[in-house]
Length: 226
Image 1 (cartoon, rainbow, N blue to C red):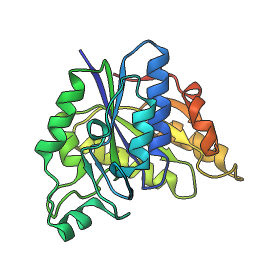
Image 2 (image 1 turned 180 degrees about the horizontal axis):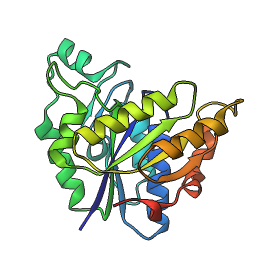
Image 3 (image 1 turned 90 degrees about the vertical axis):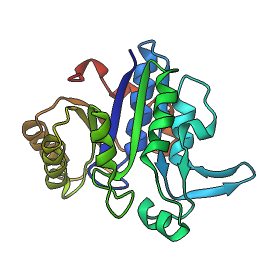
């Protein structure tokens, strides 16, 4: 049976994709055939092959399976804003059925599948539905990315509470040091470890883009709660 996890973040720009790459690398190191899936992405560039999102390209690169771009990212928008705004402006509704069809396709190919959301837990996909609604439909185990900065404790605990209220399992969380080490980072981490009722899978230090190739070394998959 395919292991599937959904990765969300405490906010946008907290390093979900860095953490996703780390998780895919760690799973590959354990011998799994892996696939990263970003069903919806905004903030993309036009290329000769069509729109390409940088985060989705990193997931494609860090999957052990050879996947074409559409398999990794079926719904893609050019403008860098919340997906529901662009989909409404373009009159291109984001359909859960399309997102789920892509997931089922990868489920048939991969042993370890990582699904990356957009933005934070409640990122809207339409006027009525959020990414959380789709995650609830699938009953995904959740992995939370916490971008370590001022305010992260409150954002993390609010997100953890929302996941709990949805009756989903928080399988683990990852601390991502998105800023150079500050005065109180150790205290932030200690507080998060004490107050989040799920295992910390690892702490990713502040990295340059070139360091992503070996980022999996910072995580321990055996700590996952499910």
